[in-house]
Amino acid sequence: MIVICSGNNVRISNSYLWGDNIIEDGVTLDHVILCNGAVIRQGCTVPRGCVLSFRTVIGARFALPPYTLISTTAAQDTADESDGDVSDRDQDAAFGSDGSDASEHSAGANSPRANQPPISM
Image 1: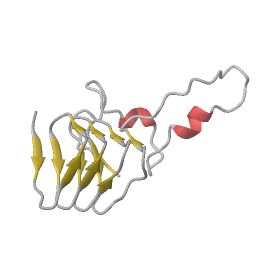
Image 2: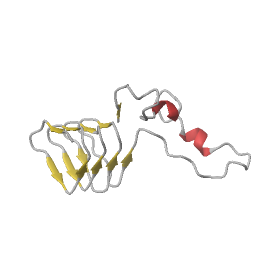
Image 3: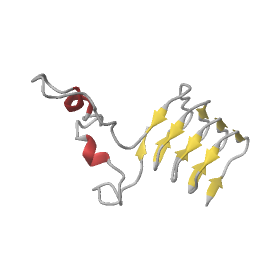
């Protein structure tokens, strides 16, 4: 496990850092989970209950709300789609600013994003 903490004034309390994380100056982590490859830029506050999934990046001086889940993949819709209405999943899949399909943003080993840099928030 590699955790790179380049920073001065970093405060980490009661948190799990899985590995290959980068934590810059002035970051505060309190009761959070950072999955492999998560990057926290300078001056960020990540409060209680937050989970940052694989290869996510939180930009400089950004403060997340408590209990936030940041992921590089879209949540799957479990609703019954046989009613003929437009699926909520179809609307939620385009979460990128370019309107691209969520499957293009997957960080899985067989995905097109496997060898691309992490998605910044």
